[in-house]
Image 1: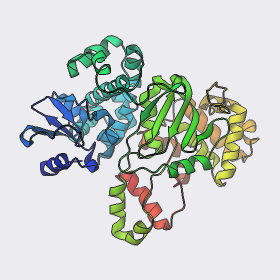
Image 2 (image 1 turned 180 degrees about the vertical axis):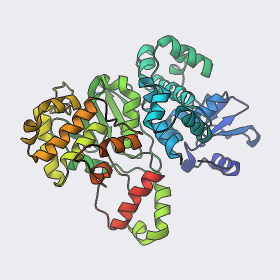
Image 3 (image 1 turned 45 degrees about the horizontal axis):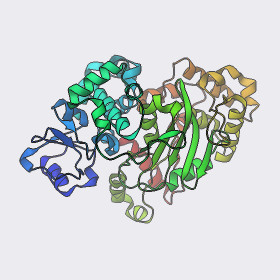
Image 4 (image 1 turned 30 degrees about the horizontal axis):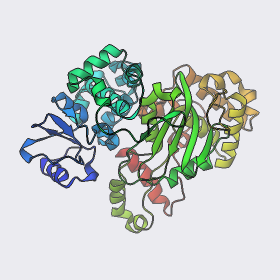
Amino acid sequence: MLLDETTCHGAVEAKDRRYDGLFFIGVTSTGIYCRCVCPARTPKRENRTFHLSAAAAEKAGFRPCLLCRPELAPGAAPIDAAERLAHDAVKRIEAGALEEQGLEDLAGDLGVTDRHLRRVMLKTFGAAPVEIAQTHRLLTAKRLLKETDLSMTQVAFASGFQSLRRFNALFLERYGMAPSRVRGRGAAPEKLRGGGGLRFTLAPRGAFDGAAPLAHFQLRRVARVEAQTAPHCWTRTLQAGAHAGWLTLDLAGAAPKLTLSDGLMPAFRQLIANVRGALDLDADLDAINAFLARDFAADIARDPIVRLPGGIDPFELAVRAVIGQQVTVKAATTIVSRLVERLGAPIETDVPGLDRLFPSAARIADAGKDAIASLGMPGARAETLLRLARAAADGELKLARGAVSVGREGLAALSGIGPWTVEIRRPARPWRSRRVSARRQRIARGL
């Protein structure tokens, strides 16, 4: 998103939350960069420079503000970019893609060359992919230092660094201080440890109402994997790569809170990105409502757009979509519960009743057609589910946040999976206007 200086100056002086995360302000008199909502004294106009991303601000030599904490900006600016390629690439990078593969492989997943990807991201964000990845690692580490009591080694590896030495050196080089100094400054975090996990606040883009995602999760609850543990809290078990544990979403208030068990902390970056996607936190509802109001003013005035909840685990979401073909949500949930009962690996948690993981691709692939069909689905659908699981287990099917194009192509290539299954994304409550519902989804994907 390109903003003119007049707009940026106005947002800074008004501390306008609508622009929070869309750009960052470099203050030349202090060498600090801030969000436009920073509670510190507003810098003089002549001392302000504007940057499209946190990475661009750090590339220009600025350090993150300790008051407004740029790592907490909703969507961290790149998420809201209009450029679809850069948008997808940043989501993959924030989820740790460059720790698992090189830039050339990431570009290949997105259907472009690494040279083109660098050019697009430099134009969109003012920083190269590697620089954006470095900044995201550092800001993640800064957040963990401020909000947790993890050791320095745990912080380094959870943030995506391959060694403690590299973490210390880059932190000192970029921020001019040792990581230990960040931990010792400022007020104590709201909550370090409690209930066997670490708790984090997820800033949404605009207003947030937890009732819709909670209703969505309740309708699709799978016994032994998911449970409502408090009036506004949803808890589930999860496998993230080689790491397993549980997470809790507190959906009360203006911003959801995420609690991760110790077992999931090594997958911190990936899970933060996936949970943001599952709660649709980066959708700009004001922009979507304004756009749709041009043609559907009465509908939007009566029934404003809500966020579209989804799934945290991409493979699990694909399995649920296949099982849900041509059956009701209740029937599909019953079959998924049987699948968990039959193939889910056991796990110990602090939550009574949660003792299974959703079956991995390898477990489903090894089960065989007869075992899958016996759960209550037609043989053709069981074969489709097996093809899906085998493709995911063999690495032929790549399902990840941000890998939209390659994921769609991979799913569409599997026999038994058509456009309805590939594109499924149901709203959490009925719409008064089907036209608004369909168009909202198209626009949400295109913004």
